Image (cartoon, rainbow, N blue to C red):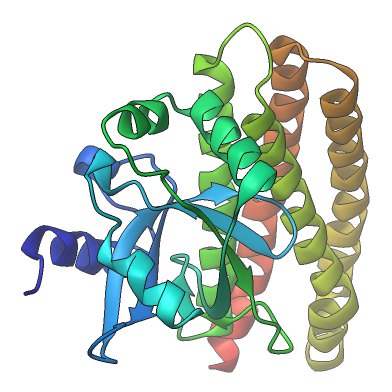
Length: 279
């Protein structure tokens, strides 16, 4: 039977490219589509996730501490190939149920970031599963949820803005020491930003130069800004590995935020009109 509450979240998530209000406002949320273990039919469920760096994210089959695993968990055990919607990208992934020390370590990391996971575990006798969703390489990051190149730029930029806002909020409300999951969140963001700028420098900007020679001064400035941002990212990485003091990390995040926001705004002002005019 369809879950009306879930469907409302799914509709809002897709309409707002990953942003939802109410109880889940400000949460890291994705849409997970699994194949029914018994029916073979697709089922889409909104689930919270944890960044884990590299090509995977983590989801936890808590079912709010109920006695039974959620249906989506049974589905992915039977059919590990799943579809993930991040709000920006839609991509295929392979689900792996973690076990032993790895499961325990990552669940502890989740609890450190949000004690609610521990409360769910206390409510049930079952061991709450932790599942890694590994993106399946298809020659790119996945299908972007945009209808034009100009819109795609804005969608990706807004995703970086949102993630950076979440990290800043976590730093502001965290404990006296820097938690392991918060470190991972920051490092995952840094890697994603590096990958994005590398793709622009090596693929997107040469294409724009060929089609719009007059854009060269703007692209030169954007490349220079990429270099400055890369320095700030590296300084944030070094701080994350050398201290547990969130105040020091917060200062580096604020420096990066200021530089990055100015960069993203300038890029949108310069590039989106070019793509809009071409379309």
